[in-house]
Amino acid sequence: MLEDALLTPSLVYAVVSLALVLLIKSALFPPLPDNIPPFPVRPWPVLGHLPYLLTGQRQKLLDWRKTTGDIFSLYFGSRLLVILNGHRLVRDGLVRNADSLSNRPPWAHLDGSTNGIIFSNGTLWKEQRTVSIAILRSFGMGKGALSDKIHEEIASYLDALAGLGGKPSDVALLTRTSVSNVICSIIVGKRFEYNDPFFAAFMDSFDKQVQASENTAPVMFWPWLRHIPGNFMNSKTLNNCVKEMLGEFCDKFINLARKDGDENMPNCFIAEYWKAMKERKSYSSTTTLDETNLRWVLLQLFFAGTDTTSSTILWFIYYMLRHPHIQEEEEVHICPSIHPSLQPPISVPHFAAGDVTLQGYTIPAGATVLPNLDSVMMDEKVWEEPLKFSPRRFIDAAGSLIKHEAFMPFSVGRRMCMGEALANMELFLFLSCLVQRFRLESALPGHPPSVRPVDAIVSAPGEFHARFVHRAAQRT
Picture 1 (cartoon, rainbow, N blue to C red):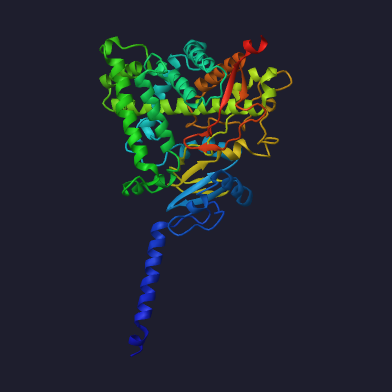
Picture 2 (picture 1 turned 45 degrees about the vertical axis):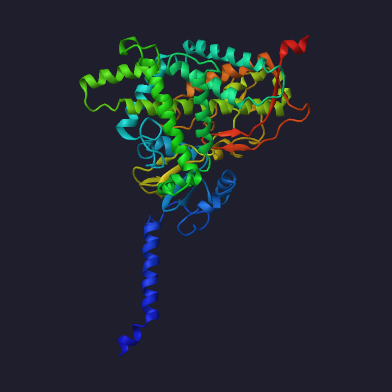
């Protein structure tokens, strides 16, 4: 019979195979609007574009911008990512389309990470951020009232540098510890001595978490990978570090602030949050202020307020070693406020809550949106010789700081860094005092260090050594 002849085993196998391929393809790469931003290259099966980005991610994204345009799409597994390049498009996406692009993706690679501020959404995010900013402002964020706390810490930092006796030293840990102490003075109302066992353990755990955050991108997009036996992509180490920070340190910070009772808490962030929580619970059953969110807010404040600022200080020291003549120029007393660091390659991811149209393309609801800050800060169309370290580009003929709309190290929009004012104050005071007291010299005279950036939560310089020579000693 003709029908029997057509239904051969080979044909049945081919039809079933084709159906399975189409089923798998539709599951891994669901149908999308025809006018999504273009792909720079074809995605791999299952993995998408991830194999292209295993090495040289920053340069690869910049190269794809040149060949594809300011907006393009990538697949990480079955998740669609849309990359925004250039300051105009980033501002258009995050400011003019803030209603649709201010959410965070539903990351599930860290237990409880949707609490707090950074990765939360909706009412929870809005209340946590509003209350936290109000508290920080009450402590003088962005005002002179906070400068006393920062100056107190700077004095200890400079004394510790002086204690090195001008010997070549790696000051990364000391710098992170000192910057973290500024946050501690706000959060718990006191600073810690650098050799305090509790604080030393806290900084050790902090460093482990920063190191564990490297190379965890695949786990963000395939959360089930963290359940693979072993420690795939440091996923278990990262989760354990977060749990340790929350339990061993954030909880203890809270207990330390409350040890004399709620009515006798010191003047600190924890106390003010606790007061706001009790007040709101007295008249509302829907407030998101609670101890769980407080723990996560503290953890995120530590990271946002320590890693970014300390990395910028380290980049400043590094560039002073490579450009020693700048230390003697008057502008060095201004340039600390302009962030000489290499910023994170991309901003914290955003999430499309609804369809968005940018440059004629459709970003579909549910897509992850990544603003590429490299493309903003290193744009040859905006900055002359962007890879050249040149503080003078930010200073006009009168010696005043030039504010450029394309300079956005804190990102833009509703999700821009809420600690911008504090970070700017810290950087100006730390770095101005640093170069006034010391001349920064290479470990080997005439041989400045050359390191590659270490891209984790932020971009930090690799290990290098520097000599901190007291200027008074140079004049004698």
